[in-house]
Amino acid sequence: MPKEIELEKTYKAVRIIITNDQGKILILKRNPNDIHYPGLWDVPGGGVDDGEELREAAEREAEEECGLEIKIEENYFNDFYHQEKKIHAYGFNADLIGGEVLLSNEHAEFKWISKDEWKNFEFIPSVTATLTAFSKSNEIGQINNYAFAFLGEIVEIKMDRMLGSKHPKHEFVYEVNYGFVPGTKAPDGEEVDAYLLGIDKPVESFTGKCVAVIHRKDDKDDKLVVVPENMEAMTDEEILKAVNFQEKWFDSVVIRNE
Image (cartoon, rainbow, N blue to C red):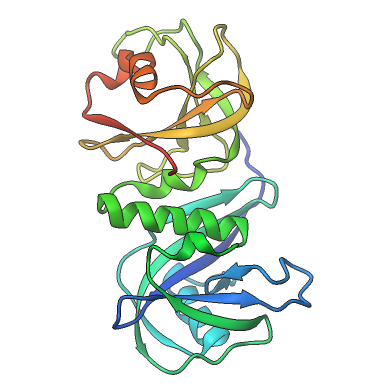
């Protein structure tokens, strides 16, 4: 990906999915008088302080927001990027170690719910993205689910491989526009890649809707599938056919929101 592009300053936040010994997860209802998302459901989390590690921030926020001691089970499982606010929100899985729920003034209510109940509640949009990734990771296993956070979202793509261009090393021709989402970071250290479908001419940039993710079972580099907002739905077979020029070398599947 181009490295000469100067990116705007971004901020970090953490979201924590805390699981108790009954296998239920903790959700919090925001104070109805709060100026930010009053009355919507949330999960523990908050901003990362300067110089603070993500895991440290997750442990601190769990204690500050609900008085709980937790054990982080793994590194973050998704990175939701809020383009408008320039915020990366990292999702963590954690087990409850001790303590009783003691809410801060940000929240008015809490519930322990089963892992498949969260869709019955109205959450903050960025938290919905985190819970979607959490749900997918439980269904499919530990895969590169950082990409799930973009499902259903409007994203901007910058093209570094326009339709009709050749791959600089392997020399195959790009049959669709192919680019990346600025300001993001995938596990390979580069920006999150994306296929643009439904546009039959080369373009340098495009803003559209992420309708699916191409997950490579044998690689660590998932791809977004972005289409014009008003485009009719494409089947999984149509998507795989459109990207076969590159995905034919991988064991790839299409993943969508329910």
